[in-house]
Image: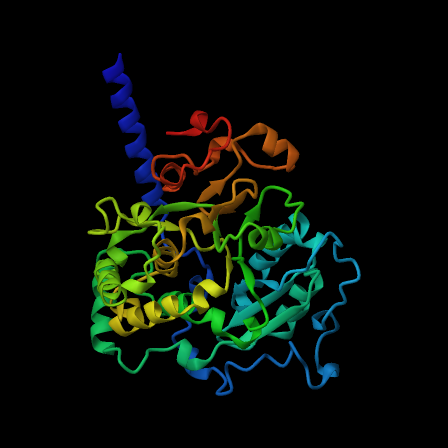
Length: 406
Protein backbone atom coordinates (compact mmCIF):
# COMPACT_ATOMS: atom_id res chain seq x y z
CA UNK A 1 0.00 0.00 0.00
CA UNK A 2 2.76 2.45 0.99
CA UNK A 3 4.67 1.65 -2.18
CA UNK A 4 1.58 2.21 -4.32
CA UNK A 5 0.89 5.56 -2.64
CA UNK A 6 4.49 6.65 -3.15
CA UNK A 7 4.36 5.66 -6.80
CA UNK A 8 1.09 7.52 -7.29
CA UNK A 9 2.53 10.61 -5.63
CA UNK A 10 5.57 10.56 -7.91
CA UNK A 11 3.33 10.19 -10.95
CA UNK A 12 1.18 13.14 -9.85
CA UNK A 13 4.25 15.25 -9.27
CA UNK A 14 5.68 14.37 -12.69
CA UNK A 15 2.41 15.27 -14.38
CA UNK A 16 2.25 18.53 -12.42
CA UNK A 17 5.81 19.47 -13.36
CA UNK A 18 5.17 18.73 -17.03
CA UNK A 19 2.03 20.83 -16.86
CA UNK A 20 4.03 23.77 -15.59
CA UNK A 21 6.51 23.44 -18.41
CA UNK A 22 3.64 23.28 -20.87
CA UNK A 23 2.48 26.63 -19.57
CA UNK A 24 5.38 28.11 -21.46
CA UNK A 25 8.10 27.93 -18.84
CA UNK A 26 6.89 31.17 -17.38
CA UNK A 27 9.53 30.83 -14.73
CA UNK A 28 11.22 34.16 -14.85
CA UNK A 29 9.77 37.64 -14.56
CA UNK A 30 6.16 37.62 -15.59
CA UNK A 31 6.07 40.97 -17.30
CA UNK A 32 3.84 41.21 -20.35
CA UNK A 33 5.91 44.12 -21.60
CA UNK A 34 7.76 41.83 -23.98
CA UNK A 35 4.72 40.18 -25.50
CA UNK A 36 3.45 43.09 -27.57
CA UNK A 37 4.88 44.41 -30.84
CA UNK A 38 8.67 44.19 -30.97
CA UNK A 39 10.52 47.04 -29.35
CA UNK A 40 13.66 46.32 -31.31
CA UNK A 41 12.45 48.57 -34.13
CA UNK A 42 11.22 51.31 -31.82
CA UNK A 43 14.15 51.64 -29.41
CA UNK A 44 15.97 53.91 -31.86
CA UNK A 45 12.97 56.24 -31.89
CA UNK A 46 13.03 56.98 -28.17
CA UNK A 47 13.17 60.70 -27.50
CA UNK A 48 16.75 61.90 -27.01
CA UNK A 49 15.52 63.63 -23.87
CA UNK A 50 14.50 60.26 -22.43
CA UNK A 51 14.91 59.92 -18.70
CA UNK A 52 13.34 63.29 -17.99
CA UNK A 53 9.94 63.29 -16.34
CA UNK A 54 7.17 62.93 -18.91
CA UNK A 55 5.67 66.39 -19.24
CA UNK A 56 2.25 64.92 -18.54
CA UNK A 57 3.42 64.17 -15.00
CA UNK A 58 4.47 67.74 -14.21
CA UNK A 59 3.03 69.67 -17.14
CA UNK A 60 4.37 73.02 -18.22
CA UNK A 61 1.13 73.67 -20.04
CA UNK A 62 -1.74 72.01 -18.20
CA UNK A 63 -4.16 72.82 -20.99
CA UNK A 64 -2.46 70.17 -23.13
CA UNK A 65 -3.01 67.39 -20.58
CA UNK A 66 -6.21 65.32 -20.36
CA UNK A 67 -8.15 66.38 -17.29
CA UNK A 68 -8.04 62.88 -15.86
CA UNK A 69 -4.24 62.88 -16.00
CA UNK A 70 -3.81 65.89 -13.73
CA UNK A 71 -2.70 65.33 -10.13
CA UNK A 72 -5.50 64.56 -7.67
CA UNK A 73 -5.92 65.82 -4.15
CA UNK A 74 -5.89 63.26 -1.37
CA UNK A 75 -8.80 64.56 0.70
CA UNK A 76 -10.04 61.06 1.50
CA UNK A 77 -6.71 59.45 2.42
CA UNK A 78 -7.19 57.06 5.33
CA UNK A 79 -6.18 58.95 8.46
CA UNK A 80 -4.91 55.97 10.40
CA UNK A 81 -1.28 56.97 10.73
CA UNK A 82 1.78 58.08 8.83
CA UNK A 83 1.51 58.22 5.05
CA UNK A 84 4.43 56.44 3.42
CA UNK A 85 6.58 57.65 0.55
CA UNK A 86 5.42 54.81 -1.66
CA UNK A 87 4.10 54.17 -5.15
CA UNK A 88 2.91 51.51 -7.52
CA UNK A 89 5.15 51.09 -10.55
CA UNK A 90 4.30 49.51 -13.89
CA UNK A 91 6.40 49.00 -16.99
CA UNK A 92 3.91 49.05 -19.87
CA UNK A 93 3.26 49.87 -23.48
CA UNK A 94 0.32 51.81 -24.85
CA UNK A 95 -0.92 48.51 -26.28
CA UNK A 96 -1.11 47.08 -22.74
CA UNK A 97 -3.83 49.53 -21.76
CA UNK A 98 -6.88 47.27 -21.73
CA UNK A 99 -5.19 44.41 -19.90
CA UNK A 100 -3.60 46.83 -17.46
CA UNK A 101 -6.85 48.57 -16.56
CA UNK A 102 -8.14 45.33 -15.08
CA UNK A 103 -5.04 45.05 -12.89
CA UNK A 104 -5.39 48.63 -11.68
CA UNK A 105 -9.04 48.07 -10.87
CA UNK A 106 -8.13 45.01 -8.81
CA UNK A 107 -5.50 46.91 -6.81
CA UNK A 108 -7.73 49.95 -6.33
CA UNK A 109 -10.75 47.96 -5.20
CA UNK A 110 -8.82 45.70 -2.84
CA UNK A 111 -6.38 48.25 -1.42
CA UNK A 112 -5.63 51.64 -2.90
CA UNK A 113 -9.13 53.12 -2.79
CA UNK A 114 -8.52 53.35 0.97
CA UNK A 115 -5.02 54.84 0.80
CA UNK A 116 -4.65 56.65 -2.55
CA UNK A 117 -1.01 55.98 -3.25
CA UNK A 118 0.58 57.27 -6.47
CA UNK A 119 1.19 55.23 -9.59
CA UNK A 120 4.27 55.51 -11.82
CA UNK A 121 4.05 54.23 -15.39
CA UNK A 122 7.23 53.71 -17.42
CA UNK A 123 7.59 53.11 -21.16
CA UNK A 124 10.35 53.17 -23.77
CA UNK A 125 7.99 55.24 -25.93
CA UNK A 126 5.84 58.26 -24.98
CA UNK A 127 2.51 57.34 -23.47
CA UNK A 128 -0.54 58.27 -25.50
CA UNK A 129 -3.17 60.69 -24.22
CA UNK A 130 -5.61 57.77 -24.25
CA UNK A 131 -3.35 55.75 -21.94
CA UNK A 132 -2.88 58.68 -19.57
CA UNK A 133 -6.55 59.57 -19.42
CA UNK A 134 -7.79 55.99 -18.94
CA UNK A 135 -5.28 55.05 -16.25
CA UNK A 136 -5.58 58.34 -14.37
CA UNK A 137 -9.36 58.03 -14.34
CA UNK A 138 -9.23 54.88 -12.20
CA UNK A 139 -6.15 55.51 -10.05
CA UNK A 140 -7.11 57.20 -6.77
CA UNK A 141 -3.63 58.66 -6.25
CA UNK A 142 -1.57 60.84 -8.57
CA UNK A 143 -0.48 59.25 -11.84
CA UNK A 144 2.96 59.91 -13.31
CA UNK A 145 4.30 58.93 -16.73
CA UNK A 146 7.98 58.43 -17.44
CA UNK A 147 10.06 57.83 -20.56
CA UNK A 148 12.89 55.30 -20.41
CA UNK A 149 16.28 56.62 -21.58
CA UNK A 150 17.46 55.07 -24.83
CA UNK A 151 20.76 53.95 -23.32
CA UNK A 152 18.82 51.87 -20.77
CA UNK A 153 16.79 50.12 -23.47
CA UNK A 154 19.48 49.22 -26.01
CA UNK A 155 22.67 47.18 -26.36
CA UNK A 156 25.52 48.55 -24.19
CA UNK A 157 28.75 49.36 -26.00
CA UNK A 158 30.55 46.35 -24.54
CA UNK A 159 28.10 43.79 -25.95
CA UNK A 160 29.23 41.79 -29.00
CA UNK A 161 26.04 41.94 -31.08
CA UNK A 162 27.06 39.03 -33.30
CA UNK A 163 27.69 36.83 -30.25
CA UNK A 164 24.33 37.90 -28.83
CA UNK A 165 22.55 37.14 -32.10
CA UNK A 166 24.09 33.66 -32.24
CA UNK A 167 22.95 33.04 -28.67
CA UNK A 168 19.39 34.03 -29.60
CA UNK A 169 19.45 31.67 -32.58
CA UNK A 170 20.59 28.82 -30.38
CA UNK A 171 17.92 29.50 -27.77
CA UNK A 172 15.27 29.63 -30.48
CA UNK A 173 16.36 26.21 -31.71
CA UNK A 174 16.20 24.93 -28.14
CA UNK A 175 12.70 26.41 -27.80
CA UNK A 176 13.66 28.49 -24.78
CA UNK A 177 10.78 30.81 -23.87
CA UNK A 178 11.57 34.34 -25.15
CA UNK A 179 14.95 32.91 -26.13
CA UNK A 180 15.11 34.87 -29.39
CA UNK A 181 13.50 38.06 -28.06
CA UNK A 182 15.52 41.27 -27.95
CA UNK A 183 12.77 43.35 -26.24
CA UNK A 184 12.42 40.77 -23.48
CA UNK A 185 16.13 41.06 -22.74
CA UNK A 186 15.90 44.85 -22.62
CA UNK A 187 12.98 44.52 -20.21
CA UNK A 188 14.82 42.12 -17.90
CA UNK A 189 17.91 44.33 -17.85
CA UNK A 190 15.81 47.45 -17.23
CA UNK A 191 13.84 45.90 -14.35
CA UNK A 192 17.10 44.62 -12.88
CA UNK A 193 19.17 47.76 -13.05
CA UNK A 194 17.25 50.88 -13.95
CA UNK A 195 13.57 51.25 -13.04
CA UNK A 196 14.51 52.38 -9.53
CA UNK A 197 16.85 55.04 -10.96
CA UNK A 198 14.14 56.80 -12.95
CA UNK A 199 13.67 60.41 -11.73
CA UNK A 200 10.00 59.72 -11.03
CA UNK A 201 11.03 57.15 -8.42
CA UNK A 202 13.38 59.49 -6.55
CA UNK A 203 10.82 60.71 -4.02
CA UNK A 204 9.72 57.24 -2.94
CA UNK A 205 11.02 54.78 -0.36
CA UNK A 206 8.80 51.78 -1.20
CA UNK A 207 7.15 50.43 -4.33
CA UNK A 208 4.66 47.76 -5.38
CA UNK A 209 5.20 46.37 -8.86
CA UNK A 210 2.03 45.64 -10.81
CA UNK A 211 1.74 43.84 -14.16
CA UNK A 212 -1.10 43.67 -16.69
CA UNK A 213 -3.60 40.80 -16.31
CA UNK A 214 -3.08 40.13 -12.60
CA UNK A 215 -5.66 39.58 -9.88
CA UNK A 216 -5.71 40.49 -6.20
CA UNK A 217 -8.03 38.00 -4.49
CA UNK A 218 -8.31 39.43 -0.96
CA UNK A 219 -9.08 42.71 0.77
CA UNK A 220 -6.00 44.48 2.12
CA UNK A 221 -7.46 46.62 4.90
CA UNK A 222 -4.17 47.88 6.31
CA UNK A 223 -1.48 50.11 4.84
CA UNK A 224 0.81 47.47 3.40
CA UNK A 225 3.67 49.94 2.89
CA UNK A 226 3.49 51.15 6.47
CA UNK A 227 3.37 47.54 7.64
CA UNK A 228 6.59 46.88 5.70
CA UNK A 229 8.36 49.77 7.40
CA UNK A 230 6.98 49.14 10.89
CA UNK A 231 8.05 45.49 10.72
CA UNK A 232 11.44 46.17 9.11
CA UNK A 233 10.64 44.23 5.96
CA UNK A 234 12.73 45.09 2.91
CA UNK A 235 11.45 42.65 0.29
CA UNK A 236 8.19 40.71 -0.01
CA UNK A 237 6.65 38.15 -2.34
CA UNK A 238 3.64 35.92 -2.96
CA UNK A 239 4.92 33.19 -5.32
CA UNK A 240 8.22 31.31 -5.60
CA UNK A 241 9.49 28.68 -8.02
CA UNK A 242 12.70 27.47 -9.70
CA UNK A 243 14.09 29.39 -12.65
CA UNK A 244 14.32 27.79 -16.09
CA UNK A 245 18.00 26.81 -16.01
CA UNK A 246 18.55 27.16 -19.77
CA UNK A 247 18.17 30.94 -19.39
CA UNK A 248 20.88 31.38 -16.73
CA UNK A 249 23.73 28.87 -17.31
CA UNK A 250 26.47 31.19 -16.00
CA UNK A 251 24.53 33.49 -13.65
CA UNK A 252 25.62 31.70 -10.49
CA UNK A 253 29.27 31.44 -11.48
CA UNK A 254 29.21 35.17 -12.23
CA UNK A 255 27.59 35.76 -8.84
CA UNK A 256 30.18 33.65 -7.03
CA UNK A 257 32.92 35.68 -8.66
CA UNK A 258 31.28 38.86 -7.36
CA UNK A 259 30.99 37.43 -3.84
CA UNK A 260 34.63 36.35 -3.90
CA UNK A 261 35.70 39.87 -4.89
CA UNK A 262 33.24 41.61 -2.52
CA UNK A 263 32.76 39.41 0.57
CA UNK A 264 31.82 42.46 2.64
CA UNK A 265 28.38 42.57 0.98
CA UNK A 266 27.35 39.07 2.03
CA UNK A 267 24.97 39.46 4.99
CA UNK A 268 25.85 37.32 8.01
CA UNK A 269 22.21 36.21 8.35
CA UNK A 270 21.53 35.65 4.66
CA UNK A 271 19.28 33.22 2.79
CA UNK A 272 22.02 31.29 1.01
CA UNK A 273 20.48 27.97 2.02
CA UNK A 274 17.24 28.96 0.29
CA UNK A 275 18.91 29.50 -3.09
CA UNK A 276 21.59 26.81 -2.79
CA UNK A 277 21.33 23.20 -1.62
CA UNK A 278 25.10 22.74 -1.33
CA UNK A 279 26.29 25.77 0.68
CA UNK A 280 26.71 28.03 -2.32
CA UNK A 281 28.44 25.70 -4.75
CA UNK A 282 25.45 25.71 -7.14
CA UNK A 283 22.19 27.63 -7.54
CA UNK A 284 19.00 25.61 -7.12
CA UNK A 285 17.00 28.15 -9.16
CA UNK A 286 14.63 29.21 -6.37
CA UNK A 287 13.46 32.77 -6.91
CA UNK A 288 10.72 35.19 -5.93
CA UNK A 289 8.36 35.70 -8.87
CA UNK A 290 8.98 39.39 -9.39
CA UNK A 291 5.80 40.29 -11.27
CA UNK A 292 4.58 40.83 -7.70
CA UNK A 293 7.08 42.75 -5.63
CA UNK A 294 6.64 45.07 -2.67
CA UNK A 295 10.03 46.29 -1.53
CA UNK A 296 12.14 49.08 -0.18
CA UNK A 297 13.92 50.96 -2.93
CA UNK A 298 16.94 51.09 -0.63
CA UNK A 299 17.58 47.44 -1.52
CA UNK A 300 18.42 48.38 -5.11
CA UNK A 301 19.92 51.77 -4.26
CA UNK A 302 22.47 50.15 -1.95
CA UNK A 303 26.15 49.96 -2.81
CA UNK A 304 25.98 46.16 -2.72
CA UNK A 305 23.23 45.90 -5.31
CA UNK A 306 24.54 48.66 -7.59
CA UNK A 307 27.93 46.98 -7.77
CA UNK A 308 26.33 43.55 -8.19
CA UNK A 309 24.21 44.75 -11.11
CA UNK A 310 27.19 46.47 -12.74
CA UNK A 311 29.15 43.22 -12.40
CA UNK A 312 26.35 41.22 -14.05
CA UNK A 313 25.82 43.84 -16.73
CA UNK A 314 29.49 43.85 -17.75
CA UNK A 315 29.43 40.05 -17.92
CA UNK A 316 26.82 40.33 -20.67
CA UNK A 317 24.46 37.59 -19.52
CA UNK A 318 21.34 39.67 -20.13
CA UNK A 319 22.14 39.38 -23.85
CA UNK A 320 24.43 36.37 -24.29
CA UNK A 321 22.03 34.29 -22.21
CA UNK A 322 18.61 35.45 -21.03
CA UNK A 323 18.99 36.43 -17.41
CA UNK A 324 15.69 37.49 -15.88
CA UNK A 325 15.18 40.18 -13.30
CA UNK A 326 13.43 37.66 -11.03
CA UNK A 327 16.52 35.52 -10.31
CA UNK A 328 18.74 38.62 -10.23
CA UNK A 329 16.53 40.35 -7.64
CA UNK A 330 16.07 37.13 -5.70
CA UNK A 331 19.76 36.25 -5.48
CA UNK A 332 20.56 39.79 -4.38
CA UNK A 333 17.82 39.84 -1.73
CA UNK A 334 18.87 36.40 -0.48
CA UNK A 335 22.55 37.31 -0.18
CA UNK A 336 22.59 40.98 0.81
CA UNK A 337 19.59 41.22 3.17
CA UNK A 338 19.07 39.73 6.63
CA UNK A 339 16.69 36.81 6.21
CA UNK A 340 14.15 38.24 8.63
CA UNK A 341 13.65 41.29 6.39
CA UNK A 342 12.21 39.11 3.57
CA UNK A 343 8.49 38.43 3.88
CA UNK A 344 5.87 36.11 2.37
CA UNK A 345 2.46 37.79 2.11
CA UNK A 346 -0.01 34.98 2.80
CA UNK A 347 -3.07 37.22 3.11
CA UNK A 348 -3.02 39.14 -0.20
CA UNK A 349 -4.15 36.50 -2.70
CA UNK A 350 -2.51 36.93 -6.09
CA UNK A 351 -2.72 35.56 -9.60
CA UNK A 352 -0.49 35.88 -12.63
CA UNK A 353 -0.86 33.24 -15.30
CA UNK A 354 -0.45 30.37 -14.60
CA UNK A 355 0.03 30.49 -10.80
CA UNK A 356 -2.32 31.31 -7.94
CA UNK A 357 -1.59 32.42 -4.40
CA UNK A 358 -4.73 31.81 -2.34
CA UNK A 359 -4.79 31.72 1.49
CA UNK A 360 -5.45 28.10 2.47
CA UNK A 361 -6.75 29.02 5.93
CA UNK A 362 -10.57 29.41 5.61
CA UNK A 363 -10.64 31.94 8.46
CA UNK A 364 -8.24 34.20 6.55
CA UNK A 365 -10.23 33.85 3.32
CA UNK A 366 -13.46 34.82 5.08
CA UNK A 367 -11.94 37.69 7.04
CA UNK A 368 -10.25 39.11 3.93
CA UNK A 369 -13.24 38.44 1.62
CA UNK A 370 -11.03 36.42 -0.70
CA UNK A 371 -12.46 35.13 -3.97
CA UNK A 372 -10.12 32.28 -4.86
CA UNK A 373 -9.99 28.50 -4.80
CA UNK A 374 -7.45 27.19 -2.25
CA UNK A 375 -7.16 24.02 -4.33
CA UNK A 376 -5.40 26.16 -6.94
CA UNK A 377 -2.93 27.67 -4.47
CA UNK A 378 0.64 27.06 -5.61
CA UNK A 379 2.42 27.88 -2.34
CA UNK A 380 2.67 24.36 -0.93
CA UNK A 381 3.01 22.39 -4.15
CA UNK A 382 6.16 20.36 -4.72
CA UNK A 383 7.41 22.69 -7.43
CA UNK A 384 7.18 25.79 -5.22
CA UNK A 385 10.09 27.05 -3.09
CA UNK A 386 7.78 28.63 -0.51
CA UNK A 387 7.68 25.64 1.85
CA UNK A 388 11.48 25.64 1.95
CA UNK A 389 11.44 29.37 2.75
CA UNK A 390 9.22 28.68 5.77
CA UNK A 391 11.28 25.70 6.90
CA UNK A 392 14.71 27.34 6.89
CA UNK A 393 13.31 30.48 8.56
CA UNK A 394 11.16 28.58 11.06
CA UNK A 395 8.16 30.64 9.96
CA UNK A 396 4.69 29.27 10.90
CA UNK A 397 2.59 28.16 7.94
CA UNK A 398 -1.07 28.99 7.44
CA UNK A 399 -3.43 26.59 9.19
CA UNK A 400 -4.36 23.64 7.02
CA UNK A 401 -1.49 24.01 4.55
CA UNK A 402 -0.86 20.26 4.63
CA UNK A 403 -4.22 19.65 2.99
CA UNK A 404 -3.05 21.52 -0.11
CA UNK A 405 0.48 20.12 -0.41
CA UNK A 406 1.35 17.78 -3.26
